[in-house]
Length: 430
Image (cartoon, rainbow, N blue to C red; front, top):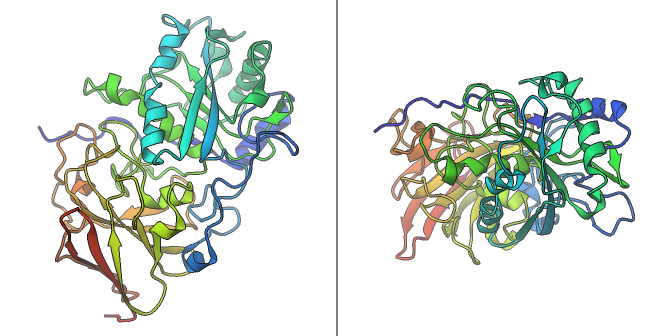
């Protein structure tokens, strides 16, 4: 049957840097993750290598103060997104919400699925290694209600106390210097159901984070409840809240807005992380260092250029992304999406076109997908997937034209292997 309206409500998940700074003022020792201090053996730095100068016109950037900008390169301070990444997982419960069953069962809700998801999405470039040095529930000294944590509460005062107590409780069993990021897996019976209110939140890229064992808690994800979309598929899909939250620790913004997933739909896990599996946009894969510069075309010059794109889900060489800059902050991205890899919900193969704005804050619509079939109702039958944009890709013979700039993106055709030939034309308005 046609999916009903989305049951999981929009929510703010990424901690603003200013808010995290408030946490720093109140906590003197804290859970270590993310970026180690200068001289540590676990190197930090930009999320991905700086792209070559040939792609310079397409390396858009946001204004100072933009929260989690879509600009490339991602600034330093976030967890690295290539190579081996060690994820510390702590399972936490409370006297008024005791852990249900074994703590490792909670861990098992997210792994090995999260590791597999990142391996597939990154084409093997991210070796995500979850570890549980404290295999039992970590009981907090206060009841859950005592921390006053609720949707929108952020870090003042509940999180300041909670982070302090997590560190104090875990420190005898954990050397925080051994890890690159932190996942706090709260017992699901603490707080409301995710169908009512989603409390999950991430501290991301905070260069002034509290310190534990000599490293700052710069990148930490807190997961509450269970991301159950009500379709009966939780065992297969419920883990995906964690790749979403970890996307923030790698520097990716929220793509949903207060209106939900209407800007991007199900084309990126940073937009919708419930329901059927989905991948990341090609722009995010380039931003994370999962695409080589040679796989990205920069259509910045006048006239018409030809580009051959291989499906984004397929590993290997070949063009994966074309970017058409409008100015130093915005542009159009072009890629091919197919029902493969993490993209099991794709119901229409074709060329996805979307606008990227590096000057827009996380959660305010930094990316918007262009719909090739407006008001069609979409083609998906997957529960709780934004249906309208599910048939957004362009197919051979179709084109998109920006009337303001004159930029035209034409899908010319495909070959037997599924590669798509795309023409980008600049310089004609009207």
